[in-house]
Length: 153
Image 1 (cartoon, rainbow, N blue to C red):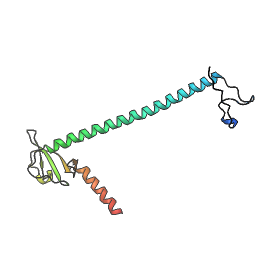
Image 2 (image 1 turned 180 degrees about the vertical axis):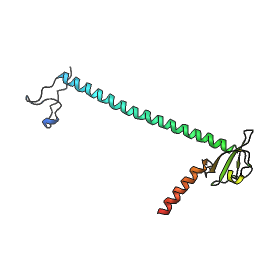
Image 3 (image 1 turned 120 degrees about the vertical axis):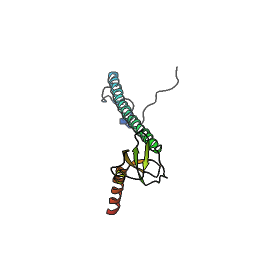
């Protein structure tokens, strides 16, 4: 047998862990079971919502990782293009493809070559300071937006 006497609550009635008055509402075990069931349902719903959010974040991170890998492959392919001059960050270069499939960079745009140039023009790219390539039109649009923003200050 236990020598412990039950502890009597000495605080305010509203903080008692048990009814302290005959006028207190009836306390039934089925009510307790209902509260536990309701709490379980709420916790399950909340946990499911949080896990769903994490799953969405994981999918977004996967998409970002794929984009980074695709950009890296594109940049690597552009760096492997033949080039007979030193590439300088900030400069725009024009990519062409020979009939045999070989890619090469030129400093001359299609307009500068004129109609006599037989190789296929593949696009213009600007070399960034981090040695990545950016489509020249996108680079031009960003530079224009930055200049416009700085002029408005």
